[in-house]
Amino acid sequence: MTARQLRRVTPVASGPPMTPTYPAPAQRPVNPCRRDPDLFFSDDPDDIEAAKNICGGCPSRLACLTYANDHELYHGVWGGLTGDERLHQISGGSKQCHGCQMVRPLGLFHRNARDGYSSQCKTCEKRRDAERNALRKPQLDAYKRAARQRKREAAA
Image (tube, rainbow, N blue to C red):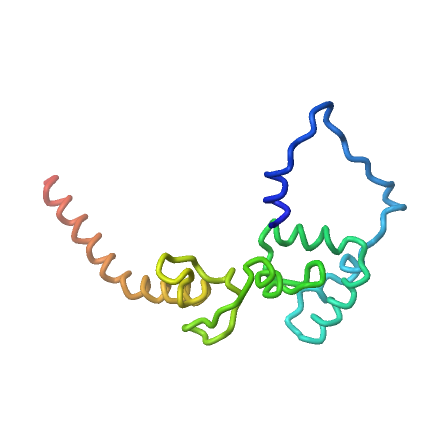
Protein backbone atom coordinates (compact mmCIF):
# COMPACT_ATOMS: atom_id res chain seq x y z
CA MET A 1 0.00 0.00 0.00
CA THR A 2 1.47 3.35 -1.00
CA ALA A 3 1.55 6.42 1.18
CA ARG A 4 -1.16 8.01 -0.98
CA GLN A 5 -3.46 5.06 -0.34
CA LEU A 6 -2.68 5.15 3.39
CA ARG A 7 -3.67 8.82 3.56
CA ARG A 8 -7.05 7.95 2.04
CA VAL A 9 -7.71 5.29 4.67
CA THR A 10 -6.30 7.13 7.70
CA PRO A 11 -8.99 9.08 9.58
CA VAL A 12 -8.42 12.80 9.86
CA ALA A 13 -8.20 14.14 13.40
CA SER A 14 -10.76 16.77 14.26
CA GLY A 15 -9.73 20.03 15.83
CA PRO A 16 -7.78 23.11 14.82
CA PRO A 17 -5.49 22.65 11.80
CA MET A 18 -1.85 22.10 12.69
CA THR A 19 0.75 24.23 10.97
CA PRO A 20 4.12 22.57 10.46
CA THR A 21 7.14 24.13 12.07
CA TYR A 22 10.45 24.04 10.27
CA PRO A 23 13.89 24.60 11.75
CA ALA A 24 15.82 27.68 10.74
CA PRO A 25 17.74 27.28 7.45
CA ALA A 26 21.06 27.12 9.28
CA GLN A 27 19.79 24.21 11.44
CA ARG A 28 18.27 22.14 8.61
CA PRO A 29 20.34 19.14 7.58
CA VAL A 30 21.57 19.21 4.00
CA ASN A 31 20.85 15.86 2.41
CA PRO A 32 23.70 14.41 0.35
CA CYS A 33 21.54 14.33 -2.79
CA ARG A 34 21.29 18.13 -2.64
CA ARG A 35 25.06 18.45 -2.84
CA ASP A 36 25.51 16.38 -6.03
CA PRO A 37 22.14 15.79 -7.75
CA ASP A 38 23.77 14.72 -11.05
CA LEU A 39 25.06 11.57 -9.35
CA PHE A 40 21.49 10.51 -8.53
CA PHE A 41 20.22 10.93 -12.12
CA SER A 42 23.14 9.36 -13.96
CA ASP A 43 22.87 6.36 -16.28
CA ASP A 44 26.33 5.08 -15.33
CA PRO A 45 26.07 1.90 -13.17
CA ASP A 46 28.96 3.04 -10.95
CA ASP A 47 27.20 6.35 -10.24
CA ILE A 48 23.96 4.50 -9.48
CA GLU A 49 25.70 2.26 -6.95
CA ALA A 50 27.43 5.27 -5.37
CA ALA A 51 24.07 7.07 -5.09
CA LYS A 52 22.48 4.00 -3.47
CA ASN A 53 25.31 3.83 -0.94
CA ILE A 54 24.84 7.51 -0.09
CA CYS A 55 21.09 6.95 0.37
CA GLY A 56 21.77 4.14 2.82
CA GLY A 57 22.69 6.52 5.62
CA CYS A 58 20.32 9.37 4.79
CA PRO A 59 17.78 10.34 7.49
CA SER A 60 15.23 11.31 4.79
CA ARG A 61 15.40 8.01 2.93
CA LEU A 62 11.86 6.82 3.67
CA ALA A 63 10.32 10.25 2.99
CA CYS A 64 12.25 10.45 -0.27
CA LEU A 65 11.10 7.00 -1.37
CA THR A 66 7.48 7.81 -0.49
CA TYR A 67 7.66 11.07 -2.45
CA ALA A 68 9.02 9.29 -5.54
CA ASN A 69 6.32 6.61 -5.37
CA ASP A 70 3.50 9.12 -4.80
CA HIS A 71 4.60 11.32 -7.71
CA GLU A 72 5.41 8.36 -10.00
CA LEU A 73 9.02 9.42 -10.57
CA TYR A 74 10.70 6.58 -12.46
CA HIS A 75 14.06 8.17 -13.29
CA GLY A 76 16.93 8.47 -10.87
CA VAL A 77 17.75 7.07 -7.46
CA TRP A 78 15.18 8.02 -4.82
CA GLY A 79 15.30 6.58 -1.32
CA GLY A 80 18.06 4.16 -2.28
CA LEU A 81 16.16 2.52 -5.16
CA THR A 82 16.24 3.03 -8.93
CA GLY A 83 13.05 3.60 -10.89
CA ASP A 84 12.84 -0.03 -12.01
CA GLU A 85 13.40 -1.24 -8.46
CA ARG A 86 10.64 1.04 -7.16
CA LEU A 87 8.25 -0.17 -9.87
CA HIS A 88 9.12 -3.78 -9.09
CA GLN A 89 8.51 -3.14 -5.40
CA ILE A 90 5.14 -1.47 -6.04
CA SER A 91 3.83 -3.83 -8.72
CA GLY A 92 5.15 -7.00 -7.15
CA GLY A 93 6.81 -8.67 -10.13
CA SER A 94 8.29 -8.40 -13.59
CA LYS A 95 7.62 -9.62 -17.11
CA GLN A 96 9.52 -9.83 -20.39
CA CYS A 97 8.42 -7.34 -23.04
CA HIS A 98 7.80 -8.87 -26.48
CA GLY A 99 8.83 -5.61 -28.16
CA CYS A 100 12.25 -4.86 -26.66
CA GLN A 101 12.87 -8.32 -25.10
CA MET A 102 13.81 -6.72 -21.75
CA VAL A 103 12.55 -7.95 -18.39
CA ARG A 104 10.67 -4.99 -16.92
CA PRO A 105 8.60 -4.36 -13.77
CA LEU A 106 4.87 -5.01 -14.13
CA GLY A 107 4.22 -1.31 -13.47
CA LEU A 108 5.52 -0.58 -17.00
CA PHE A 109 2.82 -2.73 -18.64
CA HIS A 110 -0.82 -1.80 -19.24
CA ARG A 111 -3.43 -4.01 -17.59
CA ASN A 112 -5.76 -6.03 -19.83
CA ALA A 113 -8.57 -8.52 -19.31
CA ARG A 114 -6.96 -11.50 -21.05
CA ASP A 115 -3.97 -12.41 -18.88
CA GLY A 116 -3.63 -9.36 -16.67
CA TYR A 117 -0.92 -7.40 -18.51
CA SER A 118 -0.20 -6.41 -22.10
CA SER A 119 2.59 -8.19 -24.01
CA GLN A 120 4.57 -5.00 -24.68
CA CYS A 121 5.80 -2.40 -22.19
CA LYS A 122 4.35 1.11 -22.32
CA THR A 123 7.48 2.45 -24.06
CA CYS A 124 7.21 -0.09 -26.90
CA GLU A 125 3.47 0.56 -27.21
CA LYS A 126 4.10 4.31 -27.58
CA ARG A 127 6.73 3.66 -30.25
CA ARG A 128 4.35 1.29 -32.11
CA ASP A 129 1.51 3.84 -31.95
CA ALA A 130 3.79 6.62 -33.24
CA GLU A 131 4.82 4.42 -36.20
CA ARG A 132 1.17 3.62 -36.99
CA ASN A 133 0.18 7.28 -36.80
CA ALA A 134 3.05 8.24 -39.12
CA LEU A 135 1.72 5.75 -41.70
CA ARG A 136 -1.87 6.98 -41.33
CA LYS A 137 -1.05 10.70 -41.54
CA PRO A 138 -0.93 10.91 -45.38
CA GLN A 139 -4.31 9.14 -45.63
CA LEU A 140 -5.81 11.45 -43.01
CA ASP A 141 -4.44 14.55 -44.76
CA ALA A 142 -5.91 13.39 -48.08
CA TYR A 143 -9.28 12.78 -46.43
CA LYS A 144 -9.24 16.27 -44.88
CA ARG A 145 -8.32 17.88 -48.22
CA ALA A 146 -11.19 16.05 -49.95
CA ALA A 147 -13.62 17.11 -47.21
CA ARG A 148 -12.55 20.76 -47.54
CA GLN A 149 -12.94 20.55 -51.32
CA ARG A 150 -16.46 19.11 -50.99
CA LYS A 151 -17.35 21.84 -48.53
CA ARG A 152 -16.12 24.56 -50.91
CA GLU A 153 -18.04 23.02 -53.82
CA ALA A 154 -21.22 22.83 -51.73
CA ALA A 155 -20.87 26.49 -50.71
CA ALA A 156 -20.31 27.64 -54.30
